[in-house]
Length: 143
Image 1 (cartoon, one colour):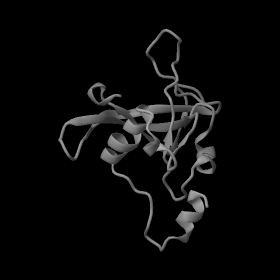
Image 2: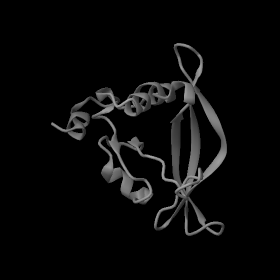
Image 3: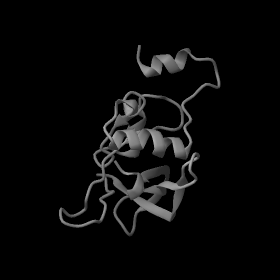
Image 4: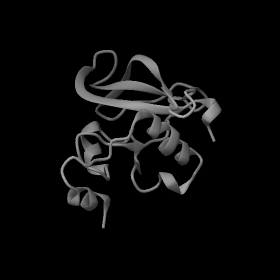
């Protein structure tokens, strides 16, 4: 039985709704550490090869929120700039990065960046309603 079938068999109100700390300290950390605990709930998706409206079909769990693992794509092979472009547009960072604190130790375990999707090419892209939160581990918590 797939996760979608499990989710549809649960009573109303039950859903996958992890906190920022759980996403960083459990799922992301285990993925980076290559532990099996990260397998199953979230899928790996190349966010640069898919448009935002294609992401719900790739998700294992339904609802209005989807969770994915995606590796960072570099804009240039030798540089540190991140490529966030797709064929139809690009993801633009908005605001400042927010610290994600561990509930157990109160230390910063990761960071959360908010991205908004724009159709077209920068700087004349048109803002859409697609929003994504990108999480990353802090160096001290990296595997």
